[in-house]
Every structure is written in C-alpha cells, then in structure tokens.
Image (cartoon, helix red, strand yellow):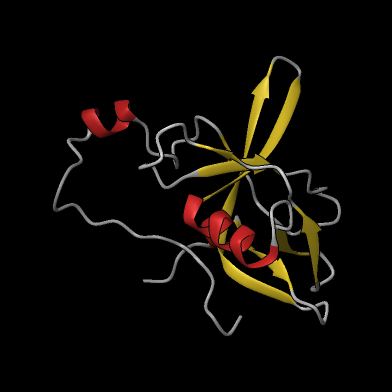
Length: 142
C-alpha cells in the first residue's frame, strides 16, 4: 500500500548538524496547526526519544528540522524548544514549527482533523488491540 501524498507530505526529518555542517537525521516528525480564535499555531510532533537522542549527541538546544522546499530543495531550521509530555513514559514531544507555507512544501494537519485519532474516534469505531495501523516516516536513503 502506498501512503497518500497528503499524509506523506506532512513529514519532516529531525536531527542535528555535525562538525562538517551536515544534517544528521535521528528520526521524523509531523506538522500540525491549531487555531485559537483568529490565530494559527504551527507545531511539530515527534517522539521524545528522537529529541532526547539529538540533544545527547549534539547538546541541548541543538535540535534541527529538515523540511522540503517548494523549489525541490530542503532547508534545515533550528528547533531549540521542545515540550515533553509530563509523563516520562509517554514517548511524545512537541515544538513550535514556524515554517512559512510559501517557502516549504509541507502539508499540515489541523488539530481536530478526522486524520488524527482521538479518544472519541477510538470509542466510536471500537478501535483496539489487533487493528491495523501504519506509521509514516522517511527512508534512511532519503
């Protein structure tokens, strides 16, 4: 099964920059947008262990996000702020995005989208152990 572009194009690489200035990916994340009144807030969601790994390898505040640009290239942006889930056993963290839609070729889920699983959706559709899932990321070669 090939994952639809509208899912695949939400993915960014998360990593650090080595001493030669090269981006070193550690994992992936996806971009969400949340609207509060008239304002929109963009955030990147990833696994806590990805950010922890980058910070252990490169230092606190050295996390970078690599995202595709509309001209077919990619840019690496600093992403020094991450908010980890209060429960250390929950492997999730979120950081501010700030990617200009005019520059970056990135799709963003709006919080509350039918594509984001919620407790209500789980209950309504009787989702549980044994159901199929998929996770989207980037190939190592990419």
